[in-house]
Amino acid sequence: MILRTRLTVPLVGSSPVTSNLKLALVESQDLNTARAWQLPFDQFSNRASSLTPSSVSFLSQIGIWTHVDSARVQPYHHMRVWDGLDESSAISFSSTSPPIATMTENPNLQRALLRRLNELPPFSVYDTTKVASIDDGPSNWSGRLDLSSYPSITLSSGKRLLARLLVGADGLNSPVRTYAGIPSRGWDYERHGVVATLKLTEGETLLEQQDIRVAYQRFLPAGPIALLTMPGNYATLVWSTTPEKAARLKSLASEDFVAMVNAAFRLGNVDLEYMSGLHSGHGEEFAWRCDVMGINEAETQLPMMIESVQDGSIASFPLRYRQADSYISSRIALIGDAAHTVHPLAGQGLNMGLADVQSLAKTLEYTVQHGGDVGDEMYLDRYNSERWLQNNRMLGVTDKLHKLYGVGRGPLVGIRRLGLKMVDQLDPVKGWLMKQAGGVST
Image 1 (tube, rainbow, N blue to C red):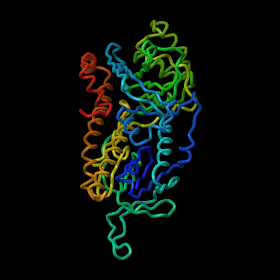
Image 2 (tube, rainbow, N blue to C red):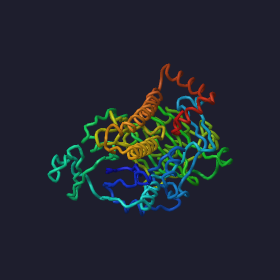
Image 3 (spheres, rainbow, N blue to C red):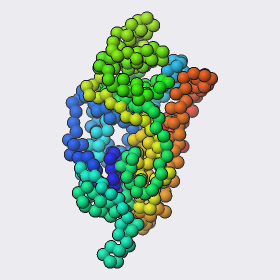
Image 4 (cartoon, rainbow, N blue to C red):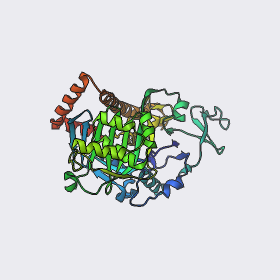
């Protein structure tokens, strides 16, 4: 049984070995809404993800990627990252085949997943349904079976289900993890991620003239700002900043919000701090500062100017670090945000969840092939051993980057500058970093 609040669902039914397992999916939302999702060609959801080549390969292998609307998908082949306190401290990554990553909207993936599920052997789906409680199963079922080790799930409809294996894909505050008694440790970053769908001015950078799409990320003291390319002249924004600044950004008029985003990629921190304190007039202030400082709109190392923000697309969410002590217990497996929550600066959240799914599906296939019990902790440990350490490494890297670039003064800034410049000149090191971010083991 799978309790789900996210996209991440293990398609064990897509394997001939595990196709005979009886499956049930419990989903709190109405799946008909996800099935019917549709937006005009010039509008994009602000819930978008950067998929690594490994994630796209996995989605292709299990038959989901063919159902993704390719017109709403955009690979990018070049990425430029730089320090907001030193414009010369930058690093660039390039890869043509495969691309560095592929951008698509989460609803596009969800709809594709549901279409793929329709092609698989039927299984029970309980959508628009919440979990009322999770308890131990009966110790004397039908007067002859001890099922006390089986999770017993009571749904909001009153229906009760017993699970040989309960997979928790039920988010940060996972009821499955709570039932299993698995601690989750971490902290809140006291930062919010501001997201929005943006339209760029017409034109192309030098790289884009060569059909090379570029992603941009600038590390500011309050947090990084990233502009990730979407089809056409559209992009998705992820700006990590303090809760107070996030609230202020969301309260701005559209033209002022656009000016703040343009400024965040071009102005120094002192200028940004001043502009963030304004209640209005950001566009005029930004234009004046560009004129005084001689900032060229056609600067090739920067993204094209933002022209507008899509109505209703500005939103924010709190940033957290979480890692469960274990991803398994007897008849329990955790995947995605139920197991771990990562800072979005590396765009790895969904990729880590998909890797969990792939690993768990392989573990269940191995268990069935060897005549094992899919809920046996001894077999599930194959999944836990593989994913916990890999995820912990990625969590550690993103956490340290957040803390490293959150320092605005002192000797650490100079060390950071020197280190980034050195790495940018070492192609083997950059290649290794790309492989790690892309999910390629070495």
